Image (cartoon, rainbow, N blue to C red):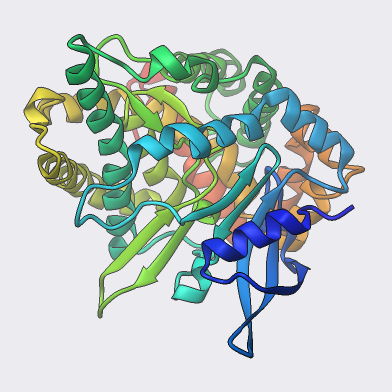
Length: 413
């Protein structure tokens, strides 16, 4: 069965300025790992205008077509419905401030299980390599786009508050789609258990007295605290957070000798909570420990500067939303989310695409890796690949240094 019918294809072509469709085809992506929570395809529409034939090359995201378990799992999580509501409703209210670069690709067609976007690869955008971290300039561009995205939540809420003559929050209308589904607990628990088992094998602190005992007591409490942070904050103004800004969800375009522009895709895991959960997880997903130590304060300041400018474009004062001291405090409190979220994601994305396909994109193994256990796979791969072991161990040992050793014996690393 075709994903899109003739009327839908014609509608998409008209959005691009063509009324005569000759035919259309789909191309599978050679790299299946580009889409973890769905299938990604190229849509090629052959069109004719004034006797000239040409092609429209577009991007399609749809439900998994060949992995029945993963498709049912995504339905249970409500992830496609969540993204559908964001793209088809709330984000239409967001837009972008006049004169501001856009923060997501243009959407050309949507129905609940299929989304069609412009293909920004044709405009010079690229996806960062999943096994590499971002440079400082790439990270700055990504932080700027994050600030612009977050600003739209504040601008929309301020506009609606003025219209209603009372405080309005996005949570009022979209709470069903902006919270973590209970069905997602299995995936997080499997990831948490993998962190514990991995540290028992590879941590540089594993010979310390009672190390395993401390892991099994402290690590679960960190993930519970992170879960609490994923709820609307009672202290800070909340925004719609992306929550999943690892390399495959970021498109970057080189603009000048050092500057970039970033756009974000895949809004299936959005939440309504403190914006610093996005900033901390973005940084932990895409940097080394050394880079985090050097860059984080500057990136927080840059985020606040871009946020201020974006709000100013729409007549909103940043001081009425959040001040710089509160941003710094909120970021510090969000680190437990950023570092634990990275501990769930990095061991997957830092693998070679061949190994990720073998474990997570094989219908026979994807269920086990997602909701049963993936400890063995991570440990075995770390023994095979030095670069993988170094990156994952560095991240996991930062959890130990921040949250276990200080409580254990006053020693920090």
